[in-house]
Length: 353
Ligand code: ATP
Ligand code: MG
Ligand code: MG
Image (cartoon, rainbow, N blue to C red; front, side):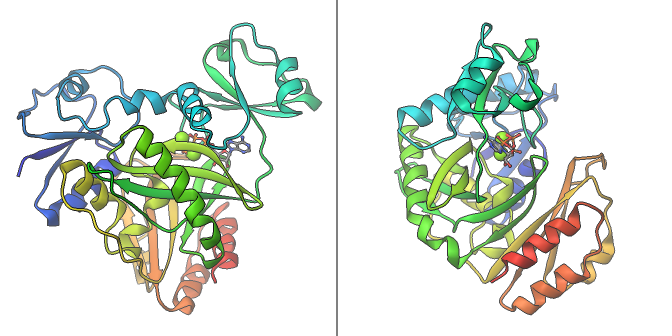
């Protein structure tokens, strides 16, 4: 079996590697700063754990390989401007927006999008970084260095945030996980829960939306679609052409997790529907120290990314999956975590069936 190279060596690359191992796929994440000459063979396959990358010794080698799956899609979705244009072209609902040009004004933003407008940098934003709120009540102006480098989005009064993770094979076959309910605090994902009976009525609508996109892009692999639920409607917030944080629960909660699905799809292995087991929930570990006492908690699965702990940085996650709701409830009661975790734990408790 040939090698699957992953552009990027963060936690997503590590979890792709972990998922490839039982399949006998040699998954090799590559640090974008690596200056090593990679032993790439023509039959190898290349994928990425991130949407964009600087030109480095490592990325140049990978990005010129003929089997880099979805290579043309990455720049299309990594730039919020072209991503939004794709959504509009495919008539997929998204938050109303316009490109912030050199001559754009805040007045124009308030006039077209309302009294609260979210500026998002076109490139490089994640975990809510690269966002700037314009508030008419405070007469906020568009910062000069955002002009030409951002889009402006209407503030959406959503009921909640959900995401759909799907996989598409080379033959166009698709499979989806149940919709996931997500809690973001200050723009960063803290917790997810899936499956939820009450989200079922939205499942086919969401699948049709993501299918349309993946088909239009002739996409192969796992893609995630983050949405705002507003009543019975879904508005697409953003797309990620890769495995996604809101799909981490599938490691515990599905017979084929998102990482395995991505490895299968990009290497051309057979896809099959995943069996979803019981109730899952996921808690991101953000800027907090590793505590092995967590391992005493029934039903808990720890993923620690071996990164230096820094404020606001994702350093791991906890997965829970159980057929006994009492086990999940007890776990939520037992976890003793600092602010703002009590909010996230209560949110999970409130959303358990
Ligand atoms: P990610 O880590 O998911 O890639 P990101 O930095 O790319 O995050 P977004 O997903 O666009 O940013 O936004 C982060 C969060 O900010 C959303 O999950 C949502 O909670 C909030 N948000 C984004 N856009 C809007 C909007 N138009 N109106 C209201 N809230 C929004
Ligand atoms: Mg994003
Ligand atoms: Mg997001």
